[in-house]
Amino acid sequence: MNTSFNFLEKSLELYRYPKRFTHPSWQAWDAADELLLTHIQQTQENIHQARIVILNDDFGALSCWLNQADIHHVSDSLVSQKACKQNIKLNQLDNSQITYIDSLTPMPQAPDWVVIKIPKTLALLEHQLIQLQGVVSAKTKIVAGAKVKMIQKSTLALFEKYLGTTHTSLAKKKARLIFCEPDLPLQQQPSPYPTVWEMQQEPFSISNHANVFARQQIDIGARLLIDNLPDCRAKTVVDLGCGNGVLGLCILKRYEDAQVIFMDESHMAVASAKLNVQNNLPDQMDRARFIVSNCLEELENHQQIDKVICNPPFHQLNTITDHIATQMFEDAHLKLKKGGELRIIGNRHLEYPQKLKRLFGGYNVISSDKKFSILSSLK
Image (cartoon, rainbow, N blue to C red; front, side, top):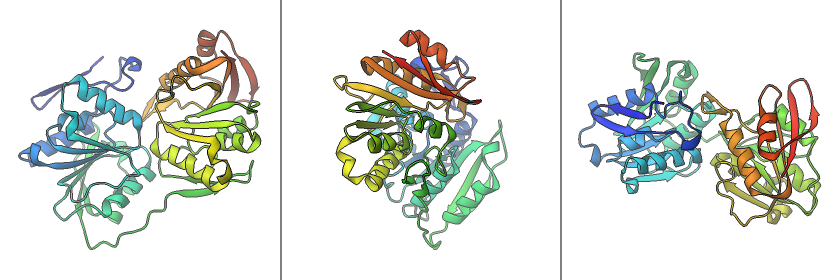
């Protein structure tokens, strides 16, 4: 496993988060990080005097390397924030130099630098560029980086539309930089987010912030799981990896005495879920809680849980992985009451049955089709 980031006369130990699930083939940095740091090193003197806004710093490589600066670490991902804090501590750096904010919080005014890792979701990039319209100055240096395949004409068009003149570097190690010069006379444009779509299975209008999974329509896995929800009468239920909250929303509507905890590592997902309960079931807000958490890490140990419902993701950023599902299952087994139930949906080719059998001792198939299976395990 390559965890030593030796670059430009600095050496850091960097891990993804959670560290215990890091695969030997994964790195916590990439070629785009290296290009960004090289450009800043060549352009900025006295880095400790610079005010830098860093967006989408996946595992903290940029924030750790630029630690002497005054940094605002902006991310929708709690996992990214935790990864950065983990690596700051591991390298005995000063965490007081970094202010962590989520992607719905206003950014600081007139930074010297805006450094962007292009996110997987183009809508999130658009949201962030709209935010930047109101904070950059004519002197702000804006640079972004990503793998070449992630920088499309549509990507550059967003920078041109919202911030100003844009051009790219040559490709190196299959990565490229984007340079943007702020054009302050550009008319500030309103954000199209959150977007809204109408649900068919229930009479709900579903609002979605920019980085929410299935932002434009309900995904087919959630649709099948909604038709096969467990009996939640007088139960405390966690909608784990809640996204826009459609599963928990359906439980609140169907079971008038259920308590639902909406949990996701995306700040925008949890904000969307809260917005959807407020808009569709405003009288039921007292039966809902909303927690930004990596799996069930932020859930209090004394909290009694009867059911955990989830549609586990099988990727982290651009990496296909089942470690998130593994942690979800392990955390559910830890937090559920004796006799409590974990109910999941997953693609049939995934090895979820083996994981459930190992943790819970068995499972039942509630429903299945050609693509998905709904599985239930009792503690």
